[in-house]
Image (cartoon, rainbow, N blue to C red; front, side):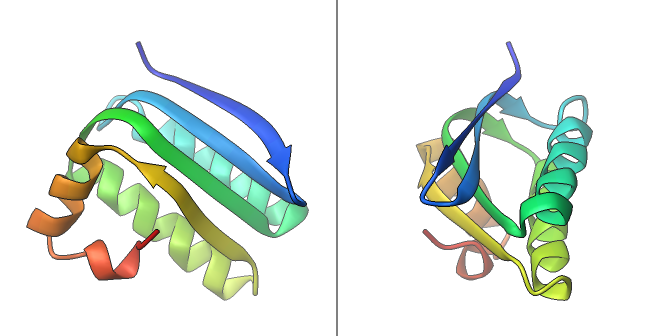
Length: 99
C-alpha cells in the first residue's frame, strides 16, 4: 500500500515514502514534494520502504531535484531500499541522487 508520511527534522521536511513509487503513485510524491519545496525550500526523502521504483518514479525524483536546484532549495535522500538503489543504478542516474 502506497503512502507518504511527513515530519520535520533539523529544519527540513522529511517525506517518508512507503510502497511502490510508480506510474500510479509517483504524481502524489511530485505534488507533495513541490509543495514542500515551495513552502520551506528544504526537502528530504526517505525511500527505505520503497519496494518498486520504475522509470516514472525516477522521473519524479529527478523533477524534484530540478525543482530544488531552480529554487535554490535543497533536496536530500536519507535512506533508500535495495530496490531503489538497483533501479537508480540500472537507469544510470544514481550519481544524481546520492545519499
